Amino acid sequence: MAKAAQRKLLLSELQLGMRVKLPLSWTNHPFLFNRVDISSPAHIEMIRGLGVPYVYLLSDNSDELESTDEEENVEEIEEAPPERDLKADTRKAMRLSQRRFLESVNQCRNVYGKVVSDPEGAYRLSAALVEDLLSHLQEVEKPFLTLVGMDEKDVSVTQHGISVAVLAMMIGQALDLPARDLRDIALGSLFHDIGKLKVPDVIRRKRGALTPHEANYLQMHPNFGYDMLNRSGLFPKEVLNIVLHHHEFIDGSGFPDGLTGAKIPITTQIVSLANDYDQQLSGEQASSPQVALGYLFKNRASKHAESLIAVLVKILGIYPPGTIVKLSDDTVAKVIMTTKEVSQPQVWACKEDGSEASLRFLSDEGVTVQKTIRAEELTEGAIRTLQMDKGISFYFSSFQA
Image 1 (cartoon, rainbow, N blue to C red):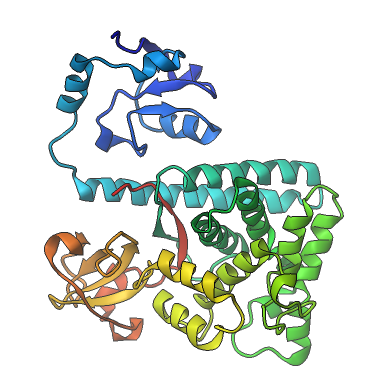
Image 2 (image 1 turned 180 degrees about the horizontal axis):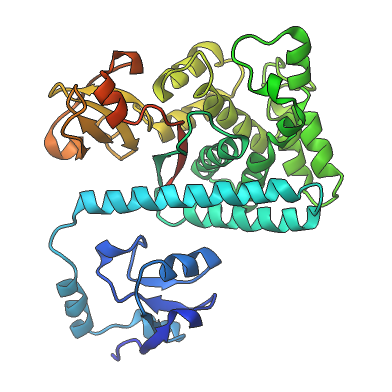
């Protein structure tokens, strides 16, 4: 059988619908295979960011593409390295997740800036952002969560929106929800707190307990956000429901309408749970992602469907990204990425004084997590090394185990 036809293609010629082959070792790019079906603008941007001058355009004949002779198979096997450099792959995946997170936050900020002055433009930009999120979610068969964040400790409304979208979309995918529902979840998550921009900063950023008047004003933010989006007539009712009811709980204790059980659509319930968890990470009662998960179990179990909480726990793992742990070799570490081995995640570790920092794979070393610890238990050196001054957010990982 003939080999698949291919010719060199400049990156400026890349178009949607093409199938290309990357002139790189499989460890030097974020895709699962060297052959890439370009199905979104994000794929084009990712290929252009690889630093190669060209790619190979493969034939459009699907039968030909699937037919390869023994010579080609041998050639591809010989090109692949005998062993993967897991640390290099992980570092690459972490950098890619961080870059995508920052780009998503910046695009979300642009969207927020257009909601009132240019609602059609805001909707177009937000729809494009949702498609990027969906393509990143579905890039690998089983995505993991990666710890990402900005340089500041306080998490902005847009950062929170992206992180909630990531968590909620992963819950939705685990439940096998259709792509339409995943899009509604993503769009609703991006906008769920936009109404907070109408709440005075003195209330929104207040540390400590709010007065009854301040609490009532803050609880109006879902109504503010709903009104802003509904006025345009562009957003689907499912998305508007998420924005208006993301603080509703199945026991009827939420706001603004005190809805119960099945009166809350499943897409809204998912965003409500993801929002509730992510919000605990910046709350005064939570000092780590694992503590926040424990808080959900102890104080919010009646407010969310047990089945949804179970899915969230499975996604986050025993030690969610951002959790600080002490290892069995007496080093300390921050969990960076979830893995299939939930009890042995990938971590950024150092000695107790903060020295000898390194990315470590506990499952490869036979090292285990001894216990979780609080930031207050770390030395100043370890606090600097583990970057405890940064807020915690999540993004999809392109790492394929």
